[in-house]
Length: 101
Image (cartoon, rainbow, N blue to C red; front, side, top):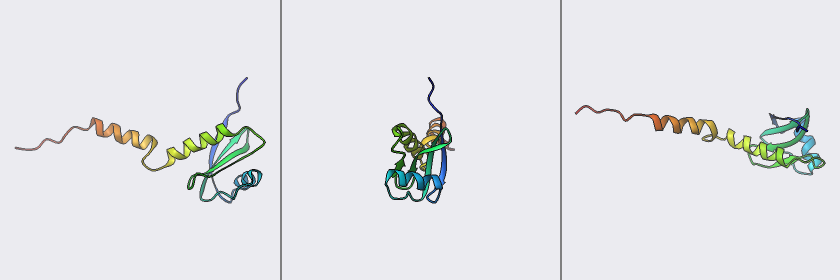
């Protein structure tokens, strides 16, 4: 048995899916930049990148979806993820400049 795929997309606080999830979860509407996780085309969880608050469908098992959204939000923060790894690799491979005597 395979698990359904999870799609992550960016949204805003006014997105219908974000509003629906906040209402279902009985939380205040999420603000700023929001990530939405969809399973089989249905929104199951949302996370505000700005403040880390989440909203999820309480009638579905969504803990894994929220964890994936948190991981993706961390990757989007400046100075983290691939950018930091590329910079570290570049610094490690840099040769010191030669000075004239």
